[in-house]
Image (cartoon, rainbow, N blue to C red):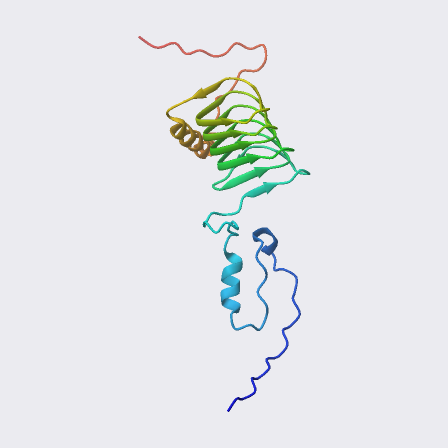
Length: 198
């Protein structure tokens, strides 16, 4: 009546992650599996947050990392290290040990570390450990007791438009950089001025 179930062959040993799998956090597909195609497709997908809300996991800049230059991201960024440049993203979190020397432009901004520069965001939250030196343009601002601010806090009705405009300016900046620059006169030489003909 009952038959013995067949034992399947033992699984092959797990191999090191495929090239690029470390960046996505996905495991490499195992050889010989019937779902090899599915596993490869899953490995190519971005890592989603554990909350299961369909959003991508944040890009995390660890304490040991220093970045000199501007950051543009379509997702979330968590800064636990140092960024010397502007950050434009959907959401940014500056951790307690994080430092940003530059402008922050995001829909959602949470500061627990140090920021020296202008902050523009729809929702801005300053934790008790926050240290901000710069103006804050916001739609909604939350400041916990103990946060330190040196600058002006201004509620603006068009915070969302300002964020979008800042992102647009950044998106078109490479095109402007490709345009030829006007020649500058050498030191000590007067600049050439053209007079209009009448």
